[in-house]
Length: 130
Image (cartoon, rainbow, N blue to C red; front, side, top):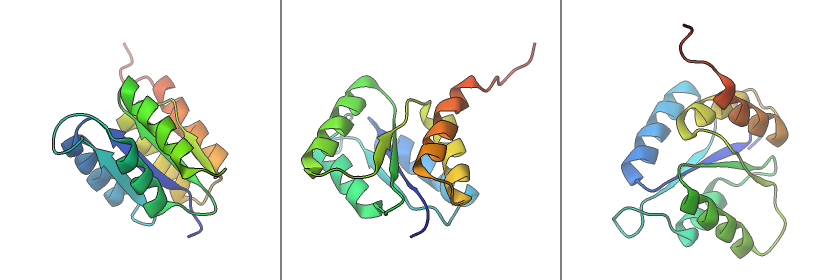
C-alpha cells in the first residue's frame, strides 16, 4: 500500500460504520478500519482498536481519529500494546470532518504528517458564514 490508512474509533459501531461508508465513496483507494462500540454496546475497546490498526497498517502509516475522551485513552493503550515503534498518529480533530479531510489527503498519496495536518485543520473550517 502506498497510502496512509485511516482508523476510526467511536463509542458507537453504527457511527463509524456509516462514516466508513461515506469515506469509501469519497476515496475508495484508502484503507479504512473501524473500532466502534464495546461488546455489542456503547464504548471503546483497546484490543479492538489494536486489531483495527494492524488490519490497515502500511509503511506510510496510520492516522487514528476518535470521538470522545475514553476513546483517546483506549487508542493510546492500543498503541502501547503494539510493543514497538510504528508510524501511527492520533489526530486531534472532529471525527467526521477530520476523517473526510484526512481520507482526501491520504488519497493523494501524501505523507502521514500531511494527513494529520489535514485532519486537525478541519476543525478550523467555518461551516456557516454569517
